[in-house]
Image (cartoon, rainbow over all chains, first blue to last red; front, side, top):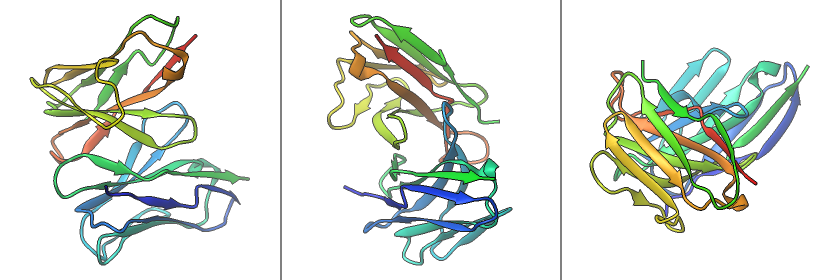
Length: 111
Length: 117
């Protein structure tokens, strides 16, 4: 069974700080996706990474896929209160289209 | 494009009743839809995979007779929680695979909050 370990589970920071969320597995994924979810809503796709070593940037968010495609990170620079939410990583196994989700990171950014 | 809707967005029912939740892909055809369950401050747990015109594939530990899934068309899948009990209270989210941009990307619905009294 493929598992995705996501850390930290909870993160509470001040506006302007930087943070990194990690997603690790012992298995290889064909692709990995990062989602952001607000309370009472469905997850919204932020980015998909497919190539080992790939780095993608989305404004203040930087996503990296490990060289071996077993891990990924999300780095937020100068966090803002609007970044508050649940961040989920999800990997797609090589056999099909089912997504395997990490446990999520609940981020709270206070002003 | 690639919008997925769910109806209802929230529902409150009495214990023992059945509740149907609809998941629709509004502007694309989805050959596969997934149903997830999410408890407060937790991640999504895959319940079942639904393919149009065939029986759903349930994850281990999910009772197929309690959570009935019907995928009658390429744009609609339904989840019926039968004889609901308070422990079934949860946030149910569907996703659909498809869309013009990437046929392998999952697009999520907004979720349905079920509360069983």
